[in-house]
Length: 161
Image (cartoon, rainbow, N blue to C red; front, side):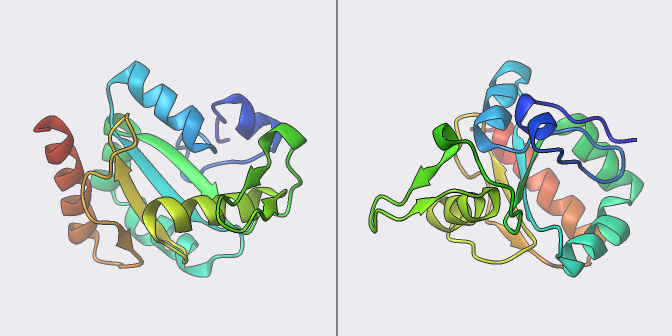
């Protein structure tokens, strides 16, 4: 029932919850954000992440949150525990250690650690279409009003930059 957007999501059969549409690589999401003029909501998540599902069912499902996610942001879900092997041209090499990340989860974990200093799920990052972090990263917190304020603060920062 969830429409998958972007070639990467179709290729790796990835989906978003609650009927949301989005992307599964930061590159596809930023490109869509530039095209749409919207900021990016990055969901650092995992298939086996109980707290991620709890955030989705208890916070994202709130009509205010769901409306903002659907209408005001480009969503990018980065699964950090996905074992699917990437094509060779999608591998990521660690600039410091030379280690090569060949599966989706390890590549996404590396991205989250090196770009946003995040090594846990769930975490949420709000970005401009240029990849600039708009407000501090938010982690697991079931305060729905706080989540709405987080999303709104990202929109405000985006609109006032």
